Image 1 (cartoon, rainbow, N blue to C red):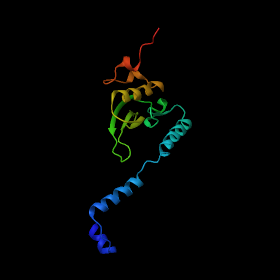
Image 2: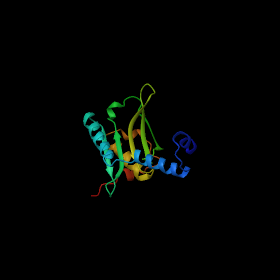
Image 3: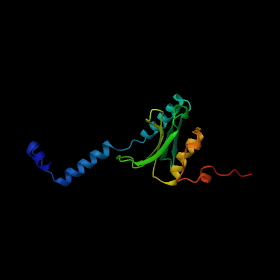
Image 4: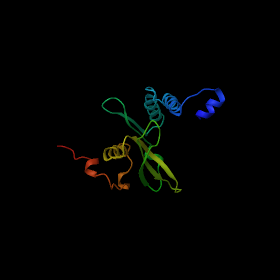
Amino acid sequence: MAGQLQADSKLVCSRSMLYRVKEAVLREVFAEDEKSIEYLLWYLTAFSDRNLGTIANFERNESGNFSRALVALDPAWFSGQAIFGGDAAHMKYRLYNGVQIVLVARDGNFQNRVAAVALAPIEDHANFLSFSRSWYVIDFRFEMYLFSVIDMQELFPPQAS
């Protein structure tokens, strides 16, 4: 590239200078706009307002930065076999290196339908626990689930008398 630049415009610069210029441009182009995360909160709120029975949750950490988000669809949309599965995938995006956790339902036509999605900073017990608690809040029938990672006592703590 340095040779092409010199041939085309008679500019002489080193490869390290071109690398620094490229990194500066990419940093500027992909810099996180502080307002952009607020759009996510607005979109989640608008989605849950327009789709009754759904839950959209947005959480911040102690310093006020984005921590995790969740969208869980209305359980009435999922009739049929009542077969559900969950998984998590690590995101590979320049500005977000978190985890996407998904709950998938199988409908009567053997088609997979996304029932809930969450973005979390890491794939750990606390984030899976928060994700699975959301299913309870919106009244998915829990007798359908097998919890191999989550202790049911932790999910539903005994009530103090």
